[in-house]
Length: 403
Image 1 (cartoon, helix red, strand yellow):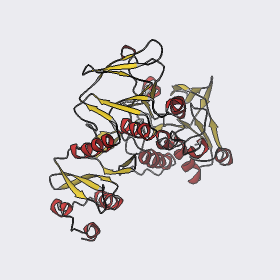
Image 2 (cartoon, rainbow, N blue to C red):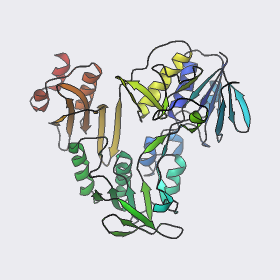
Image 3 (cartoon, helix red, strand yellow):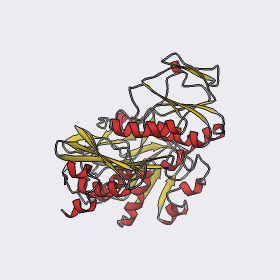
Image 4 (cartoon, rainbow, N blue to C red):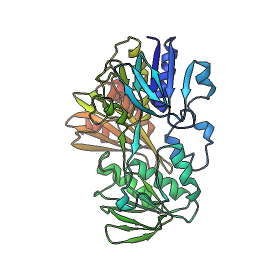
């Protein structure tokens, strides 16, 4: 093996390239990215970066010099448009680049509002890239009127930043409650109260009928008949895996680029990692949108490219920062049938423990890092403490690990 090409210069692509060198791979590594800047962190974009608390250079995962120093050819502002599997070539930047192994770390793209809803008007933004956030930053001024469409974590984080900057914020969620797909009603209630206490006009069960304006958004009509005057709109209605390149190449796609436990696609010379993939997990196939998974899966794939043949076993964890609250999530709550609440040691801290029968599946910990870390260790060890002990504030959580 002499040439590994990685398409997608985000968290997964950068981690994979670095890991290949760390593992001693001496061949050529080419990392292709569509953006004009080196690989960077995305989570701080809509938080500290938008708030002006973090300079662009501090977003970079590594100094740009790292790539040259480690013999990684970093091709920026370059788009891969096709894969020639027969001749093992990737078509990008007007040329054909040969590969021995190819890795797709193409990430995900944000869902946008349709043109019929007014999604093409100026002043309507999504939150995914550095350019997205730079485009909306001038509108983030005290007193500006913002509509956030979508009550998932992306929308809630955008609402928190906007409210913190002194904007007048309305958040609309078409389904009956915020966080409907990803969290229990108890966690949704916690964040509903948090946002309303900070002045956010949070409307659940209320969809967007249309945006108003000729070329620039100036207002919105909601499903309950309300008309709002607006200066900007932020759309946070989820993402879709970036699979077009894989699909046109005839690779198997199943809610993401389908990979096996090693990270191989349906072509044994093509691998994938990160948000663009669907992977096997406990007898099912899932897609994990998280920094942790992007890094861990990419590093596992790098090792497997070099012959490790070690299955990647994800241990999901996530986080969200809203105002002065840090939410930490361990595990996946799919299939839970009850939620156990445990108050934290200080005001405003609480954890929600998800059970399916007697089995602990996941935890949401709000400003309670101790509960999060202990739950994470229990879940990863496959251990399920008695729910009644969890609910009892007198129980020493640390003792659950020793038990």
